[in-house]
Length: 450
Image 1 (cartoon, one colour):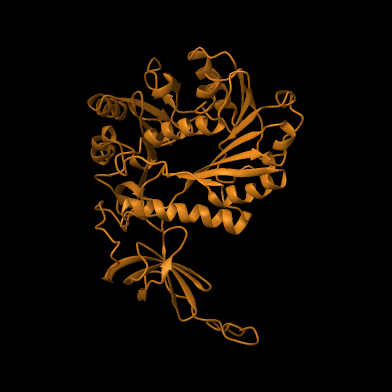
Image 2: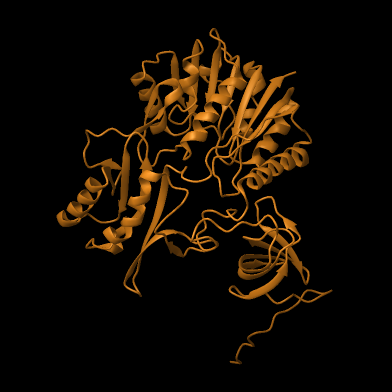
C-alpha cells in the first residue's frame, strides 16, 4: 500500500489559504481603535487582531492566544508607545489573570467605554436612542467583589496543587496572593487559602472554592471524594481563624458544617435580610446592587394599589423591596430551589403580599394562572440570553411601565426591537457599573406604553 502523502492541502479554486498563526507567536502591532469589549483592534496582512490590554494609538508587542481564519486573539506583552490614557495596572497579576481586562484604563474612561457599548447596540440593532440618558450608576472601583470562585486543580505531572484564577485566554490557573477587587474581609482568606489546601491529604479530589462575604463570611469547598477527619479538622481550624462559615459540596447540594449558622445579605435601605446559599445567584457588588434596586424602584414608580410582576426574581432582590410599596407582587423564576428560597425570604421579612411561581422563562408566557389578572408594571432581570419569548407577550399583560435590567447590551437591544413593535417607547437608559476593571456591561432601561 502506498504511503499517504502528508502535509499537502487542496486549495479551493481562486486563491490559496493563508498559513495559520501559531499560539504563542509574538508580533509588533499598531492599535487603531478599541472594540466594544475593550480590546484593541489592529490590522495586519489581511487579518484583524483583537488585543487584550492595548489602547488606541499604541504600538505594542503581543502574544497570540488563538487564531481562527482572519481573526487573531492576542494579549499585550510590551508597550513601545503608550496612549496618554494608559495608567499603571493597579494589580500585580494584570495581563495574566483573566479577571480584569481594562484596569489599564482610568475608571472614568471605563465608564465611557461601557456607555458607548450600550448606545452602539441600541442604535445599531434596535435603531433607537432613549429619550433620556441616565448617568452611570457606579461605586468604588476596587474592593467591591463580595463573591469569588477560586479555581483549584491538581497537576499530576508536577505533583503540585494549583490555586488561583483562570488565566486570560486559556485554562491555565494564575496563582493569586492578593486581588484588589475583592472586598476586604475576603483578602486574608484569599492569601492564605493555597497553603491551607496544600495540607489536605487528597489534593487530586479537590474542586473549586467559593468565597462569600455578606451577613457572614463563608468558605465553600467542592470535593469529589469524602474528606478525612484530619482534613476536616484543617478546614474547620482555617475557617475558625478567619471567623468564617465552612460549607462543603460533595454529593448533592452544598451544606454548612454547622447547620445552625445563617448566611445571607442585607438590603439596608429597606431593612431586609435575604437568605443565601453558595451556588445561588447573587449580585457580587453589594453597593451597586443597592443603588440598582433603588433606581429600579424610582423608574418603575410603583403605586400602593398596583399589582406588579417581577420576572427572573432570583432570591427576591427586587421583589421584596417592591412588596413594601405595592398591593401585590407576583414573582417568577425558572429554578425551583430559588423560588422556594425567595418565598422563605418574603415570609422571614414579614411580607405577605408576594406570590412566587416557577416557570420556564425561556419559553413563551402561557396562560398561567398568575398572569390572568394583568399588571400595572413589570420588572425583569434576565440572564445573558435575554428575555425574547417573555417580552413578546408583555403588552398582553396590560403593563404601562417596564424596567428591564440587563447584563448583555446585545440581547437588550434585540428585545428592545420587540418592545418597540408592541408599542413601548424607550424613555430612559443607563449603565450599571457592577464590574469595575472589566468590560462587562450591565444596563437598565425604562419602557413606557405609547
